[in-house]
Length: 124
Image (cartoon, rainbow, N blue to C red; front, side, top):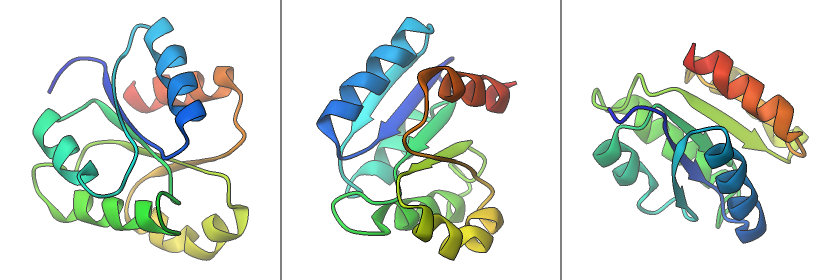
C-alpha cells in the first residue's frame, strides 16, 4: 500500500482539480478518477491509504456500487472510504447501508480545512 496515496473518485472536473491541489499541498499523493467504471479496479490495483468517493457519479448512486464492490473484495475491504456527497436526501436514505459498509461521510460543500482534518483522523 503506497504511503499517503488517496484515490479521488468524483465526476466534477472543477472539484477534481481542487481536491487534487488541496491534498497534494497537504503532502498526499493522489490518483483522480471520474467514473464508477474502473474505480474499483483502480483501488484494487493501487491499494491507496484512503478513497474519497462521490455517491453520484455518471449516474445517481453509482458511487454506492463502487463502495459495495470494494467491501466485497478481501483485497479492498479494509481500505478506508470517505464518501463525499452533495445530496443530503440520498445520504439520509442510504445512511444505514453506508454504516454497514463501514465508511465515513461528509456532505458537500465541505471546507478544505474540515476535509483535511477528517482525512487525517481517518488515517490516524
